[in-house]
Length: 604
Image (cartoon, rainbow, N blue to C red; front, side, top):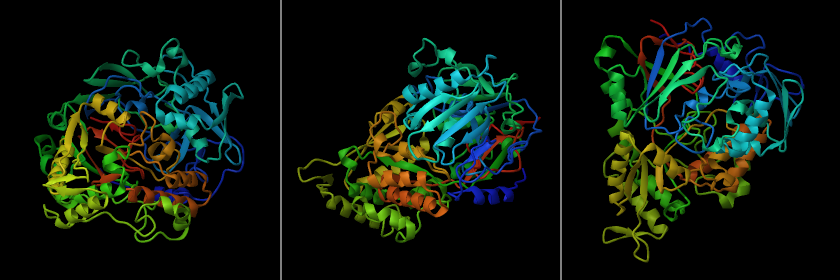
């Protein structure tokens, strides 16, 4: 398909983005809200710029998922749930535009109103908003949903609830949130929580629900059928109440979204090749280049789409659990970074085609700069000098190997750091002064052949410094149970970040969440400097301060040596049936939740 990468959207993004100064100073109902300034789309917008309001409806999209599931409730801590369900089953007051760093537009809400300093926000429900069983969405449902999610829901919802001073009904269809802390993002987060049907959960333990209850939803899709561990079929609701809401025009055009589950990546890919699956995201560039020449591709029945995006790299790699003695010392973590022979691994896995992640916000204006910290970044960091690790102020970059398998320089640097931390090679084994061998467990999710291959090469490199780790593979339920309980030494890690980092950073890296079971701070960061930088980015009112606070946070996290980064994906590779089509206009977030299947359609 032809590509229009959106010059207009880029200008809008620059105008709104990355901490642009500006406030909403007039308290009156609005059609949308932005983190800074005003949202890009006017009150009378017809549809999102990357949606086709004239798209046909019908057809089916089938994706392959590796693993299993034992619950259909994506809003609680317990159980293994298909990750997509969170985006399909929970309609919210507002919806997020993928073409702006952080702007929301009304979905369940016909309007949003906020105080001059965003100390409160009000939402008014649309008339006619309804659940899939035909019952109306009420203020009672709203208030129950926020309290329930905030008290017994998934940890991602708990932090927001703790910052609500009061939640009250102030009109027939209007609720007001008043906050107990200064935080500009809270007014937006209030619009992004799923609204559930209170009556469905009367007499039911919401936090324990599994596959026995299929959630009633006010969103465009309903779960029509499923078989635990095998598939989930979502059907477009023909009676969906919101088809004429501007944010929803041209979205959710496909009649059935089906998630098929497989035991490993090989089985999933084979299913795609024979047509059991009709859309597949490919993260391995070597496989993309060498294995996507099967008959359906050659005949034109399968299209290979390469899709650009302008979002940060995030962090993908192998995280070290600092709660464990093995990785509590930063010098040991640094040694692991040197031993990990990325240049050799990248050549073996991708033909050196993938660039490496260099920091959490690399590939974006929010990423840490090369060299010493300067200006506002340095000003923000200097009060925490005693808390910072080497490189945060002076400058830091990841170790670079010469590409050879032996990686002599990296091995030597690793041995030096291990010795500084009290570990030396004795009779071929890395030991401490008491003779205790240094070892650790690497926990991997079942079915990830790529991660297994990477770890196999890492294990060979570790042998050169006298370390022999245990590699364990767990099925999806066991993997989630163990990572929720932080029962691992090292494990696979993926954390996406955005151009508008906010309160979720506390969940990712905040001290208060470091020991919360089921939380997302897998590395166990407890840093006053990290907490302060998150607080700073949430309260910044100028472009310079917002950007500087994120750059400073990026420096602290990167020099913390918590994660061994692998490669980044600055493009997305999606192979799909020719009948599955999408608009020419690609949003700045590219292939991201809210784009496929949301704005795709099926055309014979």
